Length: 363
Image (cartoon, rainbow, N blue to C red; front, side):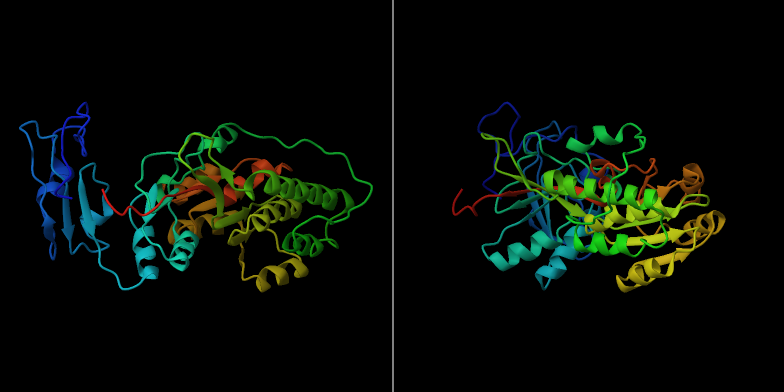
């Protein structure tokens, strides 16, 4: 770290460039002030009188809930948090900031696999420096408060409104080709939905299956000449709300999409669910609340949404936003329910880019 040279951005020999403006506020605190229990391994120092060039620093003794760990600092300072296990390290990493990027240096395949399964950032980097986004495939949404919608290739799809169009009825209601868990879900409603309703849900589930095979279930690879990277989609927990006056078939259709995405689901419904469906959801440990709109809004105002994402089927979106006090921690998807898998799978998934390099042996 002490060998890194801080210099102006147009100096080709620079290892560390200037910060955007002279250090002040929390940025200056990160460069000059230690919290309780912390000490400098390498203390950053200004290298000129502008206040924008600082030699990089390293502080140790940082705790996961310290101001330094919970704040994004546009300054060349590294904080070291001591943990006992990789599992604990992943939990600390996932609990910090907006989680736009996370990295791991390890030559142990088991550790790499464990980290890939648990890391929640939008951009994962293995044994390499984070050099910015991969061309044409970089998720910009992050996690937690930076995760309102999936960006990049899916941003445009969510900037407008989509409307369902009546489909053509099929000659049969075969469930061939569906994921087993989706097929079981649909079978639990076969005695309560009429032919038209069931066929509509079945057709939508087949669209989900096609979208999964063509887009979401397949890993995309960066363009030739760009930094090697893989784009994948990860499931995210979602609470599904069926409002008063909305039919069961819409709930089943949305649950089919969430099931195909392997998302963890919660259900709040104004409609009492049929026994077979209720039993299946219980078996899958899906928590179900039967409550009218007023009760749902009251519960949301007291205990929160129970998830960072809500898929609303009908109801008053503004009333829900008021009940949640405009919380930036919750994203609400309230578009009309459609039969398009490309659209309906989006609330249940997040994009994630994975880049891998070689652990450097020398500078």
